[in-house]
Amino acid sequence: MSMITATARPMIRDVQKAVAAEFGISLEELLTPTRTVRLARPRQVAMFLAEELTGRKRSVIADAFRRDWKAIKEGVSRIGMLIEADPDLSLRIERLRLRIGTGAPA
Image (cartoon, rainbow, N blue to C red):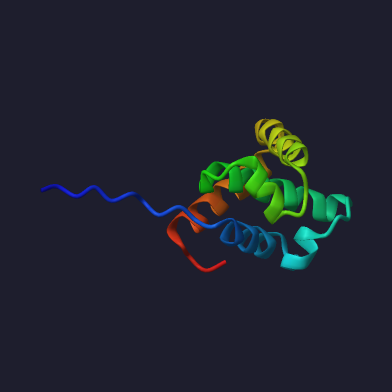
């Protein structure tokens, strides 16, 4: 009998911690309602990666970020557009994908 094992997906909290570390902010700052670019951009990156890497529904991701699903949709969309225009952000996100995907310390 053959057994197929699924690759473990990261938890939303793993994504949040890795992004906070990458951007030099605390986890609490990442989750705060403050909308300054210094905090909003990392939060949007974390939302983007949480959706991409965890396979969780937007409603679950929204709860983890203390927001509604529309905020997740907007953040994911914004980062999707910025990746195309900002090579530095694109590289940063790729670094995070690798770090989170391999379980390397944040």
